[in-house]
View 1 (tube, rainbow, N blue to C red):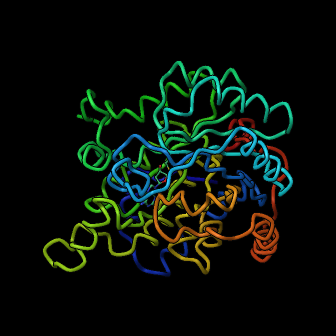
View 2: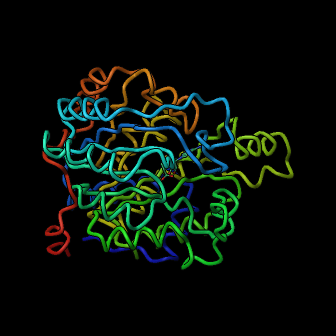
View 3: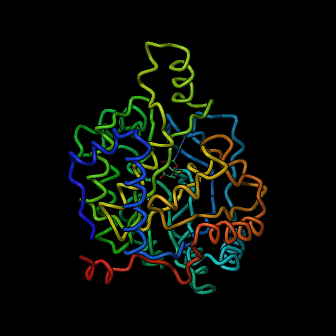
Length: 365
Ligand code: SAH
């Protein structure tokens, strides 16, 4: 039933702004979602284990050059406690996310992963940035199931501009040389379920490059695809660039007119090209549209939500972008209102770890 759109059709949809036409896209993505992954919404408890970061990403508030951030790293016991709370909330998976923090060592995190796996039935997802093959292999051996690493954009020039290479490394020259795409291939070889994704609405990002990103999702056969609108952070170079662009007509064309809408289109098209993937309605969507960004994501192709399970006192310090949704919600309240909100749109919280089901993949037309 799902005819996978080709490159030309993807581009046409990304340029489409007629609400009636777009309704057809939302309906199609929602139907493909229902047929391939069902009405269950899998909950992944997000635990932001450290905001230390050695990188200088031009989009992210945790960049090393932002001296105004009070840095923290959770203890092993705090992580374990947060994981237990995630399980109690109905999450089948805990996602351990951080800046790129060399203080998170192979052995220390390996022990944390082993403790979570022995004490709970949770699947463990890591999202710790660009780590070496050896480190990734050891975390896989310790029991980590999945890894999330967004390639952010497949456009080599834009990626170089927003994500400076580490000292001594050269920038990207071609899509094939994209360091994050190379790591995604390594993760797959190591047996991780592999997730990636992009930001939508980065200053200077073209609609053509988003069409290319969606083709990459398909080629990489991703298990998970995370898409969020870019949200300017004032303490970053891209935050400043956005301010300048808004006040200068000459620069205004580097900004996408409606990143929120473009993000929904990208979610819907990602569902069409990777029908059985796990696709979250991201926190960035819930932030850009606090009223119903999450629900709209879920009705336009998404099937996963990631409640924030970071201990409250650290949550506001993990400021990758400002005014993040859930910054001061109590984890428990978030869970209760979440199931009510899911019911209202005819969905329910999933049970089990909610891994991508390869049998569905094989059996589906
Ligand atoms: N250090 C890890 C985790 C980063 S946070 C890594 O680099 O993979 C997870 C995601 O948040 C990033 O991959 C990026 O896509 C998103 N993000 C960061 N800054 C953002 C911003 N200003 N607006 C929207 N999304 C942002």
